[in-house]
Image 1: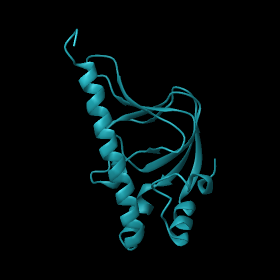
Image 2: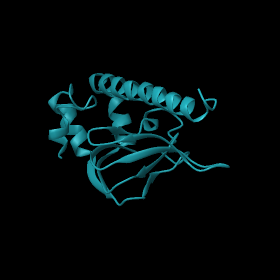
Image 3: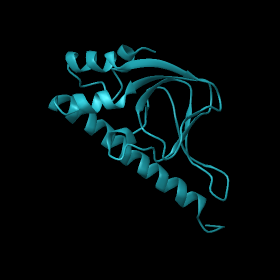
Image 4: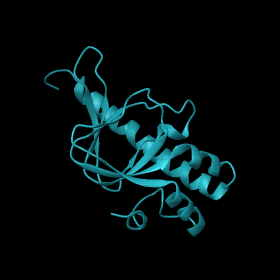
Length: 153
């Protein structure tokens, strides 16, 4: 799936001007991850963000004293990574390829820099990332409530 094909259904790409879309295209590259590969680790530097074109990615809370907890599974068309937009630019989750996965990777610093001077792009990017962050928080809350519910309830 190409960036152009993703444009129709992606909140990040759908409302972009042609100029903004071409800019994102210029700072993007296709990357493939084998099953089991950690794409990014909690507290690692958030230097890229991704649109998944094929495969499945699990967002996990990494283990401390117990096994990793899978919070959510993402697939084609989903935005992977929201921490890249907010200082301190460090990941809040671990992302692992649950199947062979192809993504379009974007250079986060280049996008942040462009957003500083392109208010239309900044508005679109911030809106898409904020929607995804809120959706992820809701998913995490539901998953944690399920994990820690009282037995028999």
